[in-house]
Image (cartoon, rainbow, N blue to C red; front, side, top):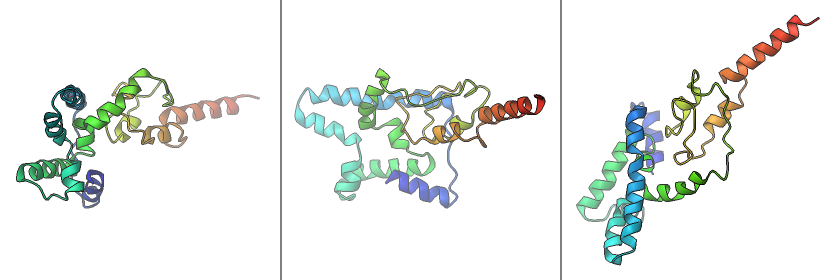
Length: 180
């Protein structure tokens, strides 16, 4: 729902907030704290865990269609409003499910996201195209935050847009033109 609303907002010209990377780096751990808190609460009384699980607005927005007590509706609406200005706001900063699903990425079993040595410094093209700021300004990809949208990989293989590939083409052309 938040993605559809954000897409509509962008098409209607609603300005998108770009979170500075230093702030973004401090916000994304919140979802892991929430996840660990919920995990800890799940070991205790069930009622407490169910109440704490309300951090996930899915029940309010989708299952109950906003027919709930005002605090739940206000919370879900606040997240949707934030999502109008910040793409995937809830997923990026608060979603405990995303945090739990991201933990296996730390194991590094699959290293399929490719990078050029020039990625990050000086080039920032992939980082600028990443919808969730999973690419550090230095060029490395945070696998825990990556949503596998593949925008960076599309750029990585695009010989017209990727500066590293364009430079490689120019060098090959110069070598081909300079040889007898």
